[in-house]
Image 1 (tube, one colour):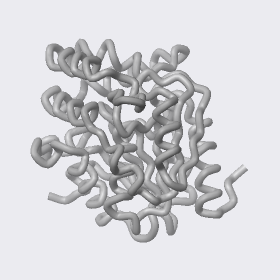
Image 2 (cartoon, rainbow, N blue to C red):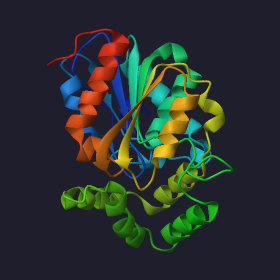
Image 3 (spheres, one colour):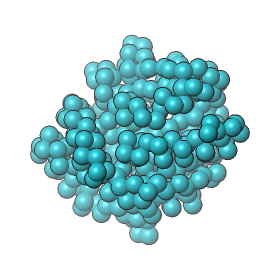
Length: 272
């Protein structure tokens, strides 16, 4: 099976440097539509769906392979092998940010920069680490999802999206959640919310932008600050925005932050 088919890969733009976008839980590559096209003028932009999400080949979702995020990291590197020549910037949202960071640890020579949008290395509070949730909170969330995935999606997706002045975005995220295969989504959710990659963070040496919202139900400000403290060569940028998906609810601010970071990191002149 070709990786292009397995992961519904699309390539736009040309350039000597590639930007590959990795979406978050319950989403697909269309979530980057307000941000990615602008970079196609200067970069080779690669969009794809995580295996088991969007229009990927759901039959390729192997519960053993994807029992950890490393299965998705292997897929990301497969996408790069198939579509990329030259240096790469990886942009990941939410759990996609964790996949991106782990990829920079696995193959640092492949990447010149990483952009982590709403990242969290661990969602569960642990001693002095504030992840945003107690273990009981995560257990309850997963139990509610197991009991009725569609009902859980309809309640949680608008809260995750935030954007109180843009209810259509919450509705869009709800539809995106509900389009997923419930069995795959529940398995991926357990992996996502129970993952702890804090021990891997300091192993990533690729320059990083940590892009965080000022009011995020899923990832509190303390998580961004922890990442900035432990991730070498990182920049923390907080966007004034309510929600967990600034690339949808605050695309201009997100694009400007990414553009400014890349211009400084890759040393090119950002467009005015």
